[in-house]
Amino acid sequence: MDDMSIQDYLEQGGKLTSPANVPPRYRAELMKLMATFVDSELAGAAGFADTINNGPGIKERIAAAKIVLEKTDNADKVLKLMGEFGVDQARYANHHPWTARLERAADIGATRSAHDMRLAVFNYPLEGWGDAVVMNLLMGHAADVQMQDFKRVSYQPLAEAFRLIAPIEQRHAELAEEGMVRLMAEDQGAALQASIDYWWPRVAASFGSGEGNRYEALRAMGLRHRPNAEIRAAWEERAESVLQGLGLTAPT
Amino acid sequence: MAQFHNLKVTDIHRTIRDAVVLTLEPDDRTAFDFIQGQYLTFRREFDGEELRRSYSICSGRAEDKLQVGIKRVEGGAFSTWANEELKVGETLEAMAPMGGFHTPLDPGAEKQYLGFAGGSGITPVLSIIKTTLEVEPKSTFTLVYANKGVATIMFREELEDLKNQYLGRLSVIHVLEQDAQEIDLFTGMVTEEKCAQLFRTWVDVESIDTAFICGPEPMMLGIAKALRDHGLDDAQIKFELFASAQPGRLPKKAVSQEAGKTANQAEVAITLDGSTQTISAAKDITVLDAARANQMDAPYACKAGVCSTCRCRVIEGEVEMVANHALEDYEVEKGYVLSCQSYPVTDRVVVDYDQ
Image (cartoon, rainbow over all chains, first blue to last red; front, side, top):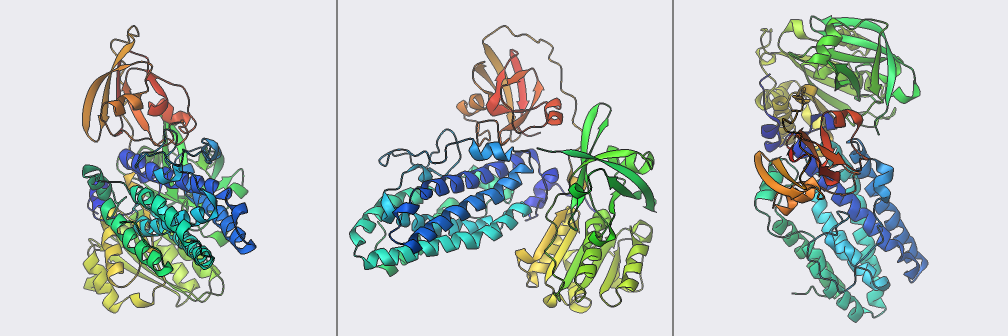
C-alpha cells in the first residue's frame, strides 16, 4: 500500500478512529471542539434546571425536566470520548459552577468566560418561563443547524456521538415550539417578542464572526465543513420562518 | 484514568511469516469482556521508555477466548518484539477493550454486511465476522480482503473454515496486489474504481445494511467514496483506521546547557503550527498565557489542568506544572506538560505544541 500523510488523508475526507491515531494539533482542536460542546450542554442544562418550576403546567415542567436530563446526558456522551484522551471525567464535570451567569445587560459579544468553553450565549441569565422557552427555541434551532456539520466531523467516534445527539437536540427545539404555541394562545406575544429581540443577536453571535486562516486549518482537519457565516445564515433563515409561523418576527 | 491489567500469554500462533496471533488470559476476565471489533492498548518499556500500542482483537465473542493479531511493522519496536522475542507464559499489560468499530447485533435480524480489510486490518473484521455470523443466523457477510500476495494473507485458512462452517453466509473476495488470479478484477489494489467494478458484478451494494472498513489511509478513502457514490450514508459506514499512523518513539528531551534559574524573566521559544516564536515572559505567567499574550493561538479549553487540550512538549529547560489531572506519568516522563498549569523555571524554555 502506498504511504499517505495523515494531513492528506484528512484533507481528502478521511476519518480518524481512536486517540492512538490523532496528530497533536488535531488532538488539541478536537478537544476544544468537544469541550465547547460539553460546557455548553452542561451550562445550558444547569441554567434551564432552575426554570422547571416556572413551567405553567405539568406538561411544560415535564418537557423542561426532560430537556435538562437529556442535555446533561448529551454532555456525558461527549465527555466519555474526552475521557479516552485522558481527561478526568468526574473532575471535569465539576470543575466549573455551571449555573454561574453574568448580568442580563452584560455585553460580551462572542467571547467566553475565563473558566470554561461554553458558548457566550450561555453566560446570560434567563428571566422567567417565556424567556427560557424563547432562548431554547432559538438556540435549539442553532444547535440543530450546527449538528448537520458536527455529524460529519472527521473523528469517527465523535461523529457517531453527534448522530445520536442530533435528533434529541432537534426534539428540544420542537418542545420549545410547542411551548411557544401555548404562550401565544395565552396572549403573551409582546413579552415573547421582547425576549426574541434580546436573544436573537446573542444566539447569532454564538456562531462566531470572521475567521479566515483558522477556518481553513480546521476545514483541512475535517473538523469544520462550512464557514461560520454560512451556518449562521442557515440558522437565520430557519429561525425566521419558525417565528413567522408563530406570528412573531425576527429582529432586523 | 487509564488502568492497566495483566494478561498471560497462553499461546502464540504464527499465521504468516511476519504475523502472530496471541491468546491471552486476563487476570480480570470481566474487564476484558469485549465487543467484536474492539482493540487492546498494550504498554511496555523499550530502553527505558514506555511505548503504547493498540492491536485489534481477532477472536469472536462466542469463542470464549481473547486473541489479538500482531503483524510486524518495519522498524516497529513492539510488533517486532511480539513477533520475535515474546514467549508463551510471559505477562503483558493492557487496558480494557476500547473502540466503537461495531454495530449492535440482534438474533432476529436479517442483514447484509460488507467488510473491507487491508493486510492486518483483517483482525477486527475477523472478530466482527465470527461474532455476527454466530449471533445473527439470518445475516450474511461479504468480505473484500486486500493483500500484497497469497503469502501475506493473515487468517486465510481460518476464513476458509468459516465459509464452510457458515455455508452460503460468508463470501470472501481476495484482491491481491501482486499475484495474478484467474479473474483479472481480483488483481491490483482496492481503489475507488476497483470497488465500483466489484459493485457491478460481485457485490450487491444496494442491499448492504452496514459496511466495515479497516485498512491504511488511501484504501479507506477510496472505498468510502465508492460506497457513498453507491448510496450508503455516513451512518452506514464504520471505519477503523489501522494502527500504521501511531506515533513513533520521540527523541529524548535535550538537557539544557545553561540550566540557569536566576532571572525572573524567562526566554520561552514556542513552536505552534510549524513556526517558532521566541518571547520574553515573566516566570509567574503560564506558558499558555505567555503564548496567547503574544498573539499565538495556543490551544486550551478548561484552564484547570483537567482537559489536556493545552498539552505541549518541553524540548529544553524546565517548567513547573502546578496541577495535572489529565496527563499520565508516562506522558509526563516524555516531557509533556499542560501549558495552562506550567510556569518557566529555567531562564530558557523551549516548548512545542506540534509534537
